[in-house]
Image 1 (tube, rainbow, N blue to C red):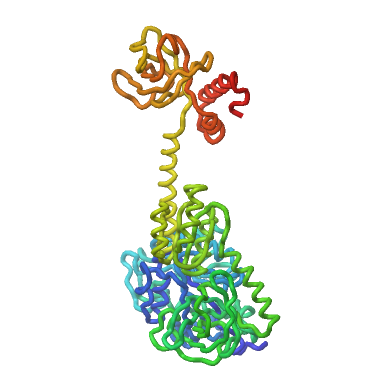
Image 2: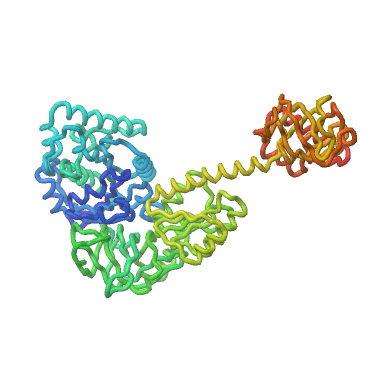
Length: 599
């Protein structure tokens, strides 16, 4: 196939990185838009797509492209601006990323951060080639900005101290990458781009290094990705970015087309949040003007009759009301093709939508991509999930959480990303005591859950410890009978374990019931417990000294068979050997009258 411009599609580039490291700002510098200011918390929470025509790239890079001595036949670049969280690279493509290449943005002042590592790991897992934008060089102390300059031109104007500082920070990034088996180098020092990850210092604020970044990105795509970029003449395949209503069109789907072609009148299939197929026909194809965004275009869309990959396109068609962001969308040509797509859909949706009978948390999100992102995090942390789906929190979700709560208090919770809570669901949650945690920033939602879980575990531990009866063994000290009954008050030595108020006592010699400890005093002060080696006075109700027990008698803490078995199983690692010996002694006493006690 000849390498005409019409033969190659635009490479799809994903821009990734940690929160606030400047991903959207880099694109804004080129687009001249202000998308970032309209995002929740200043963070891009949904995937956006912008097409950069080759004419614009050449305009931004100036003479830099000529230095590569490459014949450029690419039509341009389609750049997907992702949220800082790693998983948003994952536009659903039946298990594979749609990204051909990626930019990993690193704040040169901060270096690698949690989402930087997560992004790197995902890129490696998906085998996506990438380069590093070492951003925010303007923040270096003493840096003298040169608006829209190439990096090297600006770098050479800085004093030696600043140059050394930047080089050291780049070496740190290289070192971190080396630990992960990636060889990296500043882009102008690389001879073989197939063996080294290119690091391009940039400033989204001043525009420095932007031309260099686009030069390297476009050059790598043209030189090494051509085999992937030949346009398929077959039916289009894409992923839905967002479902929204447009005046005059009704419900539309913002879509990335990453393979094939789509035209007005084509039959398409996608699916709803339950995995049920939605089959409809394309009524309108709307393309944003170049450098605009599907999410937030500054100008009206262009109506087109046909479009080929790679492209961001708005599709208008009937019956899209229940379409869901993150779902695949495909053009089909006949019934056989349709049936194969339905089979693929069922497999795809089963990996994301979860409905089980196990005890686990309830997860709700606004889009399949969001849902998948959080699912990955939760599964990595071995957090069980009962149900996971898209949409607002419903009463049914609360009921499911109630079932999990009964089985395990740590699972009785609902997490919601960028969703609302229906009034009847909130009412039911208040009644059942089900916490609903909502956030529109993923990593904070997971952090909120982790914090809640730690607090809940502490609460449950404290409640459990209060309810647990610990083994204990005491001896009634001779000459220290202060009252014989109502209640009896005697001095005792704790031979092992511990005693507390409300503990029941039996006589070690024959298992006879003695009574219940009412209180414990040490040197005239009430104390909550007494442990091995202590000598204290205790009051016991329900007994009489000289009749129920005598001086020098050894008394053992009594407990139910259920409590005994709980201590021997769930708490066996927490009990010292001395307390286990007291439990063994208690079991032998009990088996004198009940041979199977404690099995």
